[in-house]
Length: 131
Ligand code: CMP
Image (cartoon, rainbow, N blue to C red; front, side, top):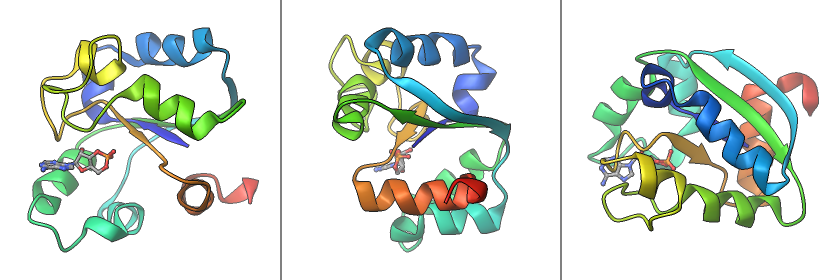
């Protein structure tokens, strides 16, 4: 599951980011435009709520609309994370979404599930009808 974050929508990068996933050959199984409230932020980022970077991350993630999408394809989790790049846009490799388009480790355009378990948990939060 991916979240295309508020910075991406504010910057008009939704189409560019979806295009990269589609061109790779991934299929969009579900897609929704919606915001994240404080409660959903705490659930989605449960593993980060005690970290120092969480309060500003929460403020950012609740600051505007996002697109949540479920993508499928061969080794989709690994493939998506390779396309997205490492967390800090300033250090992410050129050719990746963050490497090409982001200049921050907070406002980094995309969140991508990092394992089958986290994908299942996150799909349950964003697409309860699918689970
Ligand atoms: P994401 O892949 O959504 O997972 C956790 C998010 O926390 C990450 O992308 C960044 O947006 C943010 N994040 C992680 N580390 C830091 C950090 N050191 N400083 C600020 N934000 C961070």
